Length: 402
Image (cartoon, rainbow, N blue to C red; front, top):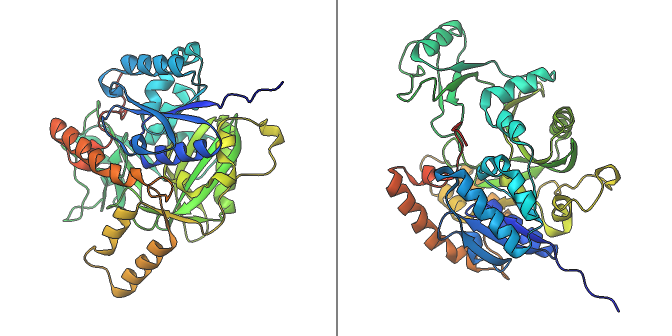
């Protein structure tokens, strides 16, 4: 007499993110029992049929240990085998990895030192340079005097970029001139040794994004994509897969040099001569996950069913597959200043893209956006920040002691 094996139980954290919903659906399609959690009372993944259970946990930024203990308790209660972080709660989970392992779950993430090195915008650039990659000139800025000195040294350049060492969605980024005038870069009010920024060489070229799953330095799954439509300078709302051998070679070389494991994403600028310049790294889930479908096998890659040395080729989405955050993409169509040609091109992209929230067999996350939005608005009011900042403020990591 034979009995069917119990489905693998997986817990997805940071479940407010569309990437978390995508992971839930991919893992559910791979016959996993999926649980989701977040510190918000309402989030889109909670309403998905892919989730066997959903619960609220303490905010990581308010107490990393309490957050990790709640996750460990859920692991033990639901016999979780794998925890998949999707946002910056990954740093808190990596800090308390042993508690999850003692409760019975593996953490789909690299070590905390590796994550921190990649998350820090200057440390990442230095790490890439140490492996022989060409990188943009990048300087640490801790005081207004540092900024004045750096701008003076770079006065022959047309444009430079100033951004916080720890940031997301390109928030607070300045792109301007190093020379005096209306377009000159200005010292941020919060600039200090405790809140450092980086001044970076501006690279002319085309932005390229990548998202990969790596295991012990081996790239198991990979997507390179264009993100032409964004909210301001930052968060992309439409993603188009492309075949880019140069980006794949870069990621493979870096992952092998660092012996990385987990999810890893890079933002590049491709110069006119084809040279790729790394701009920053996100050692976590990003929008690239939306370009994968169940039939691609990425869920199995995450579950580590196969020995990396025996992988039957790279898991990758087909060239040209497109996805979007539908309501945000629709807003791009209504943006002022677009020419008719640009508006037609955006409409064409919208028609060709799969919405990341809506599925005919799983429609409720679309309606779940309403209570999820109210939860974020309430969080934003509590902290006195706009909606975009509110979306990560209680789980982001900005160099604080964990």
